[in-house]
Every structure is written in C-alpha cells, then in structure tokens.
Image 1 (cartoon, rainbow, N blue to C red):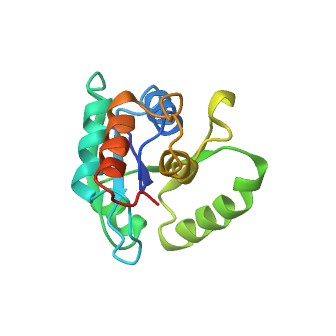
Image 2: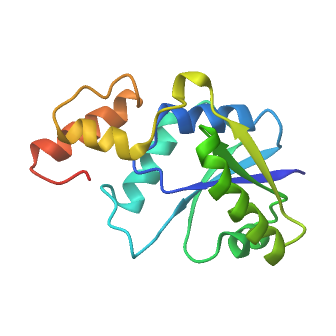
Length: 164
C-alpha cells in the first residue's frame, strides 16, 4: 500500500490545500494530512480546531486520514510507514526552499521520496497568511476557503481574537 503524507500548519486550510489533497489521493492508496503542532508558532486556530476544519472539509475522501505531529516530519513519516512526502508548489519562488527541504529530508531518510504537486493556477497566489490578513481587515474570504473556515474566521474576529 502506497501511503503519502501532506504536512502543514493548515492555519487555516485553504481551497489550495484542499485541491492538492484531493488530487494526491488519485496517486496514493492513503494520504495522511499531517497538521504540525509547533509550540514556537502562535497559530490563529488550535491544533484541534485545524484538524476539525480539515475533517469537515473532506467528508467525501475515504483515502484521507487527518493526524497531528510534533518534531521531525521524517520521523513521523517513517513511524507511519509513509513512502512519500507531498509538497505543494505555488510559484517558482517556492521551489528553492522546497528543494532544500526535500534534499534535507532525503539525507535523513533516503527511502522517503518528496513528490511535488503544482497548485492549480486558480490558487497560485493563495496562502493561509493572506487569508488571515484579509479576514482581519474585514475582507471577504469566501472565495479562498471553504464556508466552514470563513465562518470560523468571522467568529474569531467577532470575539475580538487575533487571526494573524
């Protein structure tokens, strides 16, 4: 069974993330969407909230599993029996960083490949950071994220909580 992992903070999950997840499941028997628990970052949403939003956005995807991890991705991937790490590329500017990351991961765990998915052109400009900034400034994010995510962002802002 070919299992891949798609790691990220997903803070929040965007339509671009979901596009890559849905396309990746065509090539793998299972795709683990791995939400990073990074104590050094201050995400807008809790780990539990980010995982729940992903589950809500992917009800029709039986090959998808949502999980969380802390520490080195390659260690988590090895523990889960993963053969590939999925990384999304929005633009050429992403490639340099992603290439360095892929080579570092290969050095640590040579048996785990990195597979790059080009984002659909509709999402090539999209990032979670932009979505949070637009929401914080009162803009409409409904064209960038699923409705459940747009509502969660609105609720946070209504409560006076930061989404940046």
